[in-house]
Image (tube, rainbow over all chains, first blue to last red; front, side, top):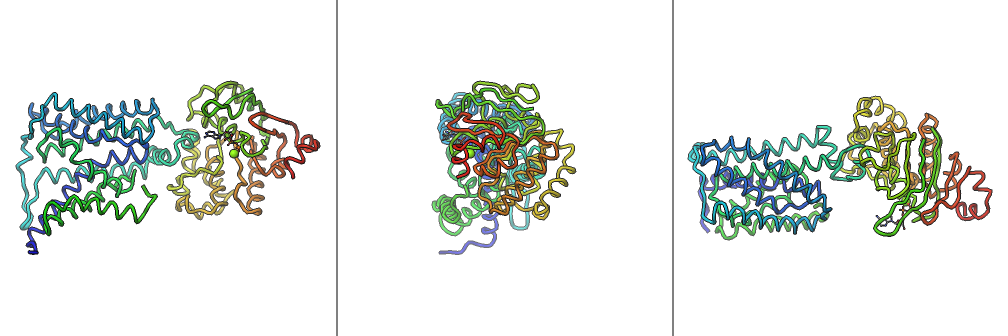
Amino acid sequence: MALPSLTLLGQSLLSGIFIGALYGLLGLGLSLSWGMLRQINLAHFALAFLGAYLTYQLAGAGMDPLATLAVIVPCFFALGALMHWLLARFSVSAFNSLLVTFGLTAIIEALIQWIWTADFRRMESAYGEVKFRVGALYVALPELLTLAMALALSLAVWAWLRHTHTGKAMRAIAEDAPIAAAFGVNVRRLSLLLSGLSAAFAGVAGLALALSYTLAPGQIYAWLGVVFAAVMLGGLGNPLGPLVAGIVIGVSEALTMAFTTPAWAPLVSFSLLIVVLLARPGRI
Amino acid sequence: MLEIERIRVSYGAAPAISEVSIRIGPGELACVVGPNGAGKTTLINAIAGLHSIEAGALRLDGRDLSRLPRHAFCGEGIAIVPEGRRLFAGMNVRENLELGSYRRAARARRTESLDRVCEVFPILRERLEQPAGTLSGGEQQMLAIGRALMAQPRLLLLDEPSLGLAPAMVLAVFKVIKEINAGGVAVLLVEQNAALALEIAARAYVLEEGRIAAEGSPEALLAQPHIRRAYLG
Ligand SMILES: Nc1ncnc2c1ncn2[C@@H]1O[C@H](COP(=O)(O)OP(=O)(O)O)[C@@H](O)[C@H]1O
Ligand SMILES: [Mg+2]
């Protein structure tokens, strides 16, 4: 086996961190609604792609990709709250939420296909071409933006849950919602807020997808396995978990690819997941 | 102050309690005793807003609470120490106490309440930054009572506070309950440990199979041989 050069190794490490940041960004909302509200929202991925396509569309109409967040974030917040309201109204269990949101995924996929067809779409933007040179290594601006957004959102949620009045009430809801309500916490309102935030994070992840990737409706499913692994590795409901675990997975994948062949990479995340689940059963 | 009139609460189709009526005067200490599965927890949880009430009335100082949303019961002055304590195990002691004073009126007096709770339970002051899940059983019970006190209740509901505690700890907890009551807070105490509960209560109810089987002063109840036999062994 030939050893890769230091530059190649450095470049793999960097790309691992960046792809890991995207795993973390995609996993953040999923982990929060799963861990805190016991709703496993498979449609999170479809929402992220819907966000990506909307970014593509708005950018095509001349908007700055980052400015599209001003439209997408509020719309997705409302959409997430609406979805939660529907799931709560029919008191869907965690397992049934998986089935219902799987159905929703198919609907959103069909919608995307209907509007944008199954053709590949690539957003043209001024950001796409910008690259920075750090020593012998290159860093692309879209990836840097993804990392920045993932870090900012994860840390913001962490600080919210740790240090604010409503954030602490949210943690209480995650542990025992009826008792939290008995002490005056408006569980319904905070759950709507968290679901809205989760969906808004899917919208932000959509922007990251549109910045770095070519879009096709079938791609929705490509991210599912590895992001689930990051969410579970990171600990459900832990706001920093998906990002940290995502980066661990991303880097391991990248190093595996550098040392062996790309075909081995997907094995890494799931082996990691299985090892961790065996090592600390009951934690998820 | 609390008047419950013929309430019914069900899980699914079968009612767990029905036609239950109880009254607690201002500052009174009342207790409900009864065998396992009689519906004591169901009753006390319904008063705290944890279960919806299917039929009957629940009034506090004349105000009907049975149609209130769940999170509004606390604002009426009711706080619960639930069965099994149900602390927020992953949050630390301070956060658990602070959550007790979540609603605005209680929040305004949070520092003062926290000081008072730590005076009653000095051990909690030493444990403030420790996760609630790492406390011993007795400390957890103190924290559950402390959390309820942080809400500045007018009516304190306690569901089996002696469960799983060492005898010395049980006595300490009962002493605190008496002190809280002496401070003007009405108390409804649910206990398997009927001897102790009847000793400190001014008024007692016997709940059996979801219905009130007997009520009156503890002395009057204990004068009835079959109740004596059933609850004091
Ligand atoms: N969550 C529940 N679902 C269904 N039945 C329940 C539930 N909780 C309690 N019950 C039933 O309601 C009755 C009263 O229970 P409970 O109020 O816990 O009694 P106690 O506190 O006096 O032991 C019991 O028959 C019990 O089996
Ligand atoms: Mg009980």
